[in-house]
Image (tube, rainbow, N blue to C red):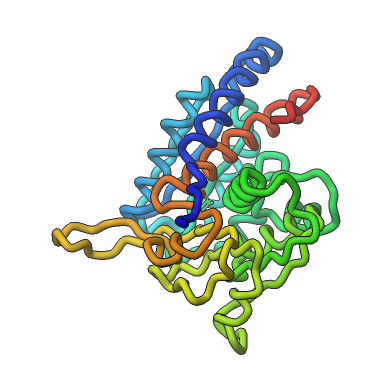
Length: 294
Ligand code: GUN
């Protein structure tokens, strides 16, 4: 029997509809619409596509999107000056600096420059620290999307053997923290793990975020396991055009897994919806209002 599909579009659409309703009532209370500033440096086509879809979703949810596109050769000083301006701008509730940044810019310094109250990506060390100590914080969208997906397959994640493949600050580490908060038993595996295949095979819940196309194969997966694929990789398709594939070999793994997220149409869709939730939260908190629970 094939795996059941966790449909990211369906789940994201539900969440976005709730955000739109809350944004309307919050706008009435604040006397303005919640605002998200997106900062994009350089010409990376994938980053342009991501930012465009985030802006479209922001507008569709009844929030304001501010766009800042800077050339590839932008200096760190100029980028920091823009962030300082956005930090001080009352119409801006959330600031999103699309990563990766060009080589001349120190990413950590930029992340630390964003006001933690406007850090809708949840990347600031203040928010990362709050997450790891169980305090309320702005949580990165992709790991939050993984948890939302996993909870569609399991009423509770408590006691599950969860394996996270990948240890990035954006996905792997915060996802592990969120899974611990859900009382899962968490292993973080990565490229130096002694026997990665064996580590994956122990998972009831396998989350993969390594950026390697179709890396995880069917015999890496415990029969019936839930597989959450965070990868979005562009590879040449049979027709010569590029196609998107995940970090999991979908065709073969879906024959073994109990539940699986497709790529595209999986976690990526929910990531954007979670960014909107964070913008709403940031706007409410900045206005001294109750933060809607979505
Ligand atoms: N680059 C890859 N993923 C992300 C993300 O979630 N946020 C930002 N800002 N950049 C990214």
